[in-house]
Amino acid sequence: MNLGIPGYLGTFTELLADHLVMALGASLLGLVVALPLGLACVRWARLYPPVLAASSVLYSIPSLAFFVLLIAFTGISRTTVIIPLAVYTLSGLIPNVVDGLRAVPDSVRQSAIAMGFSGRRRLLTVDLPLAVPAVLAGLRVATVANISMVSVGALIGMGAFGSLFTASVQLNRVDLAVTGIVATIVMALVVDALLLFAQWLVTPWLRRTKGAER
Image (cartoon, rainbow, N blue to C red; front, side, top):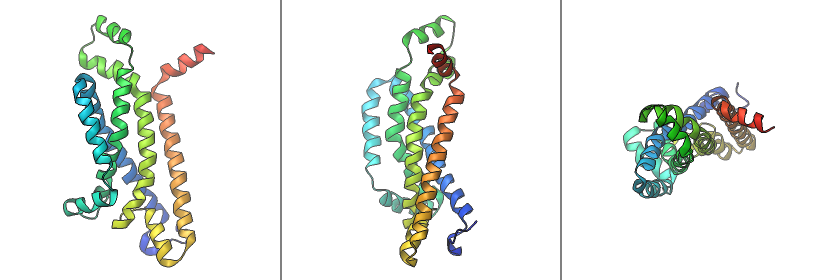
């Protein structure tokens, strides 16, 4: 599949694969980091303000500057794009993890303790599942943002569909920019819908609650 894309940029399928790998890889890495940090902030409340402040400071670093700093260590590669985008997700994911865990009713925790659940078992089978809606809400926002931000990587030669924007200017071809924009929007909508469906699958108790209310 080419759609008039210049051969030196690769095929549409190759650009799509690169874009998804970088966007989803960054979201997954951000989630892997945000979960333990969020858990630590819930357990030790004094840790939350400095962690939140640090994530906000990191978020303020311009993406291009971040890419350039990393090139010396990771070269011009997908990793150079994935790491900054993962760091940017922390400013949104950490608060969602903390809010989700704090929203678990104390009566539910006490019931789990009364049933003999250990701390780890309660975390894995009670706290985290009930925090899933909040965590996935943050993940959806972060992933859609990453799908958009990957295009900035074109400035260092790793932008996937973003390379169509630079090529559009260089070759005076508006159709390439339109292709990149449409592909990015459709990709964001599809991925967001899939994450919403995943949330529906892993939270059956919410479906039962809504059914009971009707």
